[in-house]
Length: 299
Image 1 (cartoon, rainbow, N blue to C red):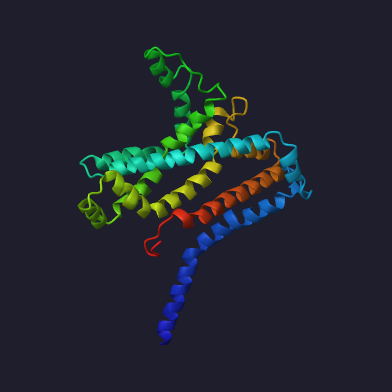
Image 2 (cartoon, rainbow, N blue to C red):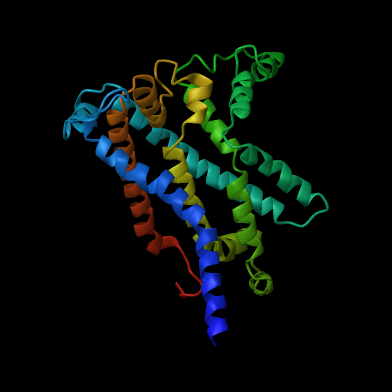
């Protein structure tokens, strides 16, 4: 009995040893920076000197004095409002096509997932920039068919949509999740619907779509959070231009915190965006009871 307890104690110690790197990393890289940034949001801090407590001055400046703050916020909101629904619908449509078993299905899935696998890397951003350059391949195709070259990167009315297109193009992760959900819809449901004379469109809206609403909900949450945190495409492709028409909130935050060394102000901006993302997430969760179907709950 004593030997057994000793073995169990050794196993507990081994477990603590293996989990300790994660615990240390969680505190060092998440918990401590989290509360440190909250403190810095109420200070004037430029990295080179000690933080100076200024209360809510950063927030007052942010809301009433920073001329780029609301502009960057509305650009980010517009980006999310347009990109997220289109990206979800597009990824769902591709998933429905790939759900049909063919010999080349595996190749197609891998090909569609590659853009998401590369993520918002520097290489992808620079490639996208070259594609839509004034003398790039896209304009070459347009002029080849008799059209006039478009200044995609110099027109404030167009440039944001170029970046939205890049976000939509990286639809692979959502597509794979939708595809797995569609594959999990019981075949017996489709068979029963076919016997009743239901066509593909009816089966999609009456069977597939209700069954995958939890996955749609999951993708909606993830894509919304990701859209509000968008950074790379704006910073690497346009630098926020032209005329600040693509100045994402995260890019403006970066400029304030790491270019102007206004770390306290940048922390205040970060906490405001955290609250905004939390509010939108809570709103989506609140609405889920009206449109998300959980089979286990029968609703």
